[in-house]
Image 1: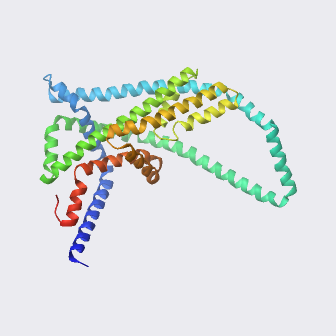
Image 2: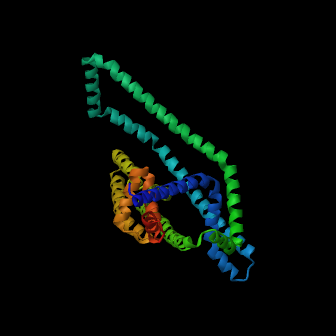
Image 3: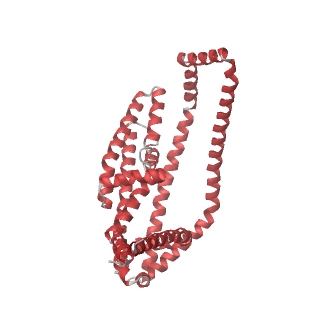
Length: 371
């Protein structure tokens, strides 16, 4: 093999190994360092308010304390109000569902008395009578299917309660982690310039400019992406709440909030709630509500499809077609979560491209020098 080609191959392998080593280091260290990263993020968020308070000649420690109290207390207050409202409406919703129990039972009984259903049952009985050899096989398959479904439901219910128990048992450790994050954010904020200068001094001089550009792009794009998702689910939630209020549905706020959150999973979020609801309304004779829910679903679907590419593209600076390809690739690679991860990965890659990282790596592989 030519010496030049061999050197390029070796440098390419070295770049791949270095990237793999970096990813492995992140994978190993992230569970240990994530409280510090969250603390830095919290300190970064409160920094503008800290600077405003310092402009009023407040001591640094007092400005940081008031900022933390404002952000954490405000977040806790908003979450408490939302959860309280949601619990109240969920209680009303559960009471409404209890009132419909007799209606559901009558619906099932009427389905059982339906002539078409009875005809199907008679045909099945006739098939059993004419083909006795298949009787045992069919019964065995039905029994096995029933056991499988029962086992799956048992696993699902057990997993749900285990998750609740784990969450409850993890509350003390979560409280400890929260205290660590707040204290670390306090110390980082009080010495913000000093800590950032110390972190910057750890980087080699040639890396300062590209790292600064990468961070600037990531900060703008990721904040824009989160803002875009918040806008989209807020639009969905508001449309659902207004639509349900116009349809005279109780607990419109709780349902709208739930649909808005579930809408984070595109293509399934809204439909998985509204479509079965519309079908049930039609089967119970509430044709007006069924049509209203279908119209509401259509409005949300069209609004989401029109707004999503434009809002995301304008927020994170990516072409709508590129963004669509990234979402599809993320869906294929990571499942439903990939619909959210795909754009984030695109943002990171775009930031590296803007900073010239890929160009520098290509130059290193080809010529052995970073440009």
